[in-house]
Image (tube, rainbow, N blue to C red; front, side):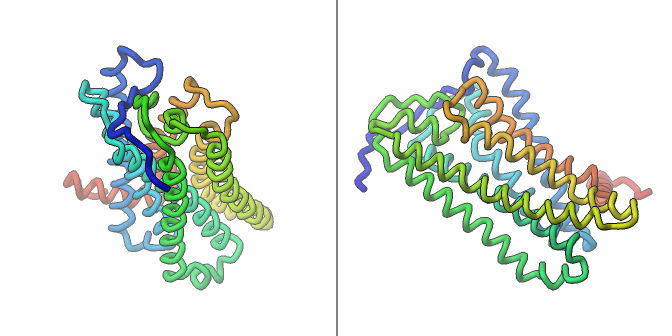
Length: 310
């Protein structure tokens, strides 16, 4: 299809209804962003440096940490740039890149949570066959598959959005380029594309969530069959961090993309939660409830700070 766009650049208006709060928001979001980067880098260092954590579960946790470093980096640097008083202008190609990478990393993370649920299912329901079922080859295939399917989904959504003609206005009433705000600027009827996008964005997370629900239904049944209270507690503890992270990931997605009528008052804080707060909390969720990760983190911090081991 011929590209009818005549818009060369767009202007990000920022978070709605936050005029005169730029300095405060800059400090707050910069703190979130730094903690997100530091926390996930520490998780990566802890897992890579500890041979006892070189297992499928921690391999997928490494991939999640990489996603949590890149995901907020799609929109946060530009947001911090204009919150500090600089230009709000973003090129048309930059806007398309933001939308693509936002959905690529978001979809990859969605598929990754599903893979991690499958890993928990095999570990608890088939512990004796775990190393055979979830082999290094299978881990590699699943890791590549999550990124590949995320790329396919993001390419479809980006092509769907930017095949529309954009001939003005060029003001994006949001803090980054996303599908709902871009469709408002299109110089064409978007009702059919909105429906296709709604089905596409909704169907993928729903399918993943149903697979996760199936995995955890089997996990709960297996845990209830464990005779010792200590065994049940350990199994529940292993899965609770993953369940918490899943809830934090899916709630914003449902609120933003599956509501019948977009609500700017709701969408902006929920999107901030999704972009900055959840990636910042994931390292805490996975480290505070995991003795192996806490021990490895302590060793990494001691090496970095030149502290003697206890």
